[in-house]
Image (cartoon, rainbow, N blue to C red; front, side, top):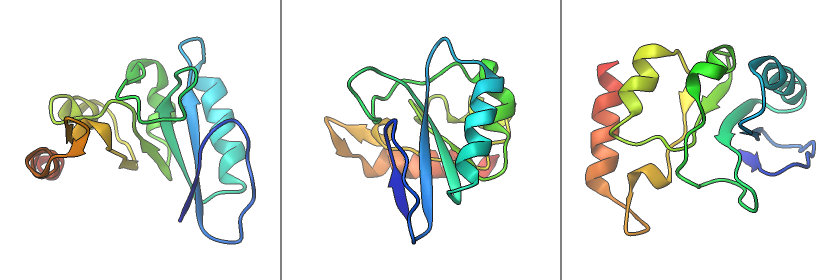
Length: 126
C-alpha cells in the first residue's frame, strides 16, 4: 500500500490509502464528503489530526465525538494520538474500521515493545 499524506492527491496504480487531516473547525459532514471523494480513488482513508507544518505523527487526537459518523465509516482508519491510555475509549464508544498507531507506542522517540503489546492486548478485548 501507498499512503498519501498532505493536501494534494494522486491516483496510483497500486493499492493506496489517503490521509485526511481533521481541523478543529471541520464538521462531520465535511469529512464524510472528503472520505467519499477519497474512496473513489483510494482503497482506504486514514483520519488524522491537522497540525500546521506537520503531515501527521503529532500524537494529538481530534475530538472523536464531533466525527462519529466519519470514524464509523467502512474502510476508514482512525489515527491521531491513539495510545494505550485512550484506545479503549475509542473502541468502546465508536466502531472504527481500523486503527493506525505510531507515536502513541513510542518512548523517547522509539517504538516501545511493551506499549505495542499493551495496545494489542487492549484492542483484542474489544
